[in-house]
Length: 149
Length: 152
Image 1 (spheres, rainbow over the protein chains, first blue to last red):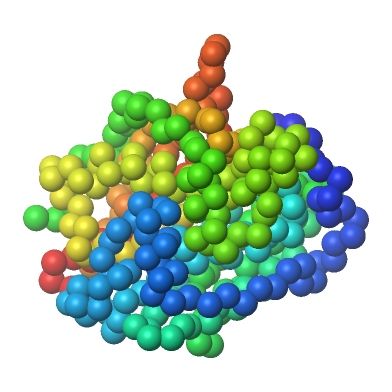
Image 2 (image 1 turned 90 degrees about the vertical axis):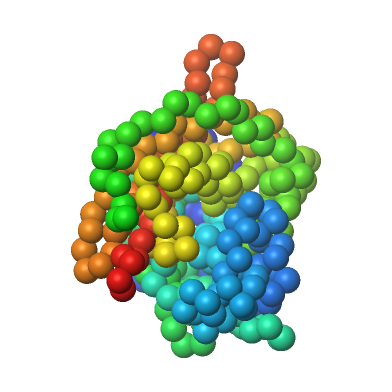
């Protein structure tokens, strides 16, 4: 991160951002097949993400979503907003609560990306992600550091 | 047996290379609902000046988790995976991952902290792209697992 990466013209300009402004929002659905797809794509085959039997054996109420699926889906909202992957410098989160996923039907997740901090010298912004399922914040300190033009 | 603190500070030998493919990037991008065309289309990626399709930020978890398995699946480390919850994750990038990259990983066990019946285990994966001259740092992945004690 010593030098500013070369960025596409579609990357938002630093001067267009205001602190606490919402820059992107997305609502997505999670169903069991979402988790099976993610398991295959990521290589994370932990059975608590597909077997109710094993999930309840370890004390969960039901199958839960992969935390990394949630982080990936939430971070992609920022990726799609900045357009150029070179603008993503850092992404972090704590996994605060699991997302229970019903056997039938789906559950809904709301992602809101807000400007959390601005660094005028580096033309960088910290984008804070609020990720809510059934009224609960499922990620904590979900922050993406982005380079802007 | 509780978790083995002797592993703190351990650095593992460089892994064999993971070769990043277009199809794996596309599969992963679709699985997280990415709408970035440069993850799916070579032409779109070239439009950004990339050498090939680009991976979403969290794609690096595939490579990191393979490296972390060296530690977690070591019986001597005594990480009881049935009692593990993922606590936090962080990706710090020097440059994006592109299809065609051959990525090697150096795994470190950074820290084990026990508190309130939980052992918090933090690993760090330094991931490099193999080059003709030198390896180039691409991303560092930090991951913390919370391991519940046997009586809790």
